[in-house]
Length: 184
Image 1: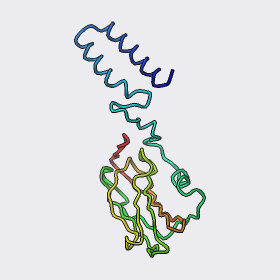
Image 2: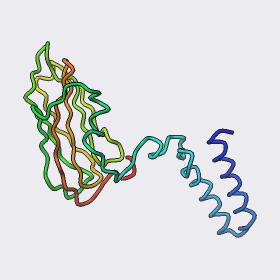
Image 3: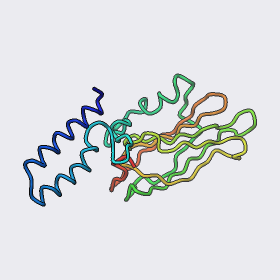
């Protein structure tokens, strides 16, 4: 029996017990509410059959270290804390909308250019907040955007060049009102 079958079996068992013990209108309402809510508990399924935040590796509130953020992307390639800079406010009153800029002096020629810029979060439920694809046609490697932040943390901008080198910057931001704590 698969894990999903066991969860569904347990769900039917709990609902059956509730129906037999609660025959009032409040009990039926509670039973229907639980029937909708139970797929969210265990098994990693939501109402629409999508994976839950936990099964996608989203752990809101967990502070990850810099190597935990960068190592899966860099995989031993040359890495330098230079040539790229994050510009954002030190204090964000509301984590729902925080301005963020990334500036770089890396070359953008046909032979040597920034291919990707990863925007990584230390605390958000999803580590990779954004991935920007660039090329020689971009002119320069600079980005302005807005992000949601799940509390005070450091943000990492990681630039990958066409020659396989990586450059990064790290910025500590204080967030007074957290956002995106639910994986959205």
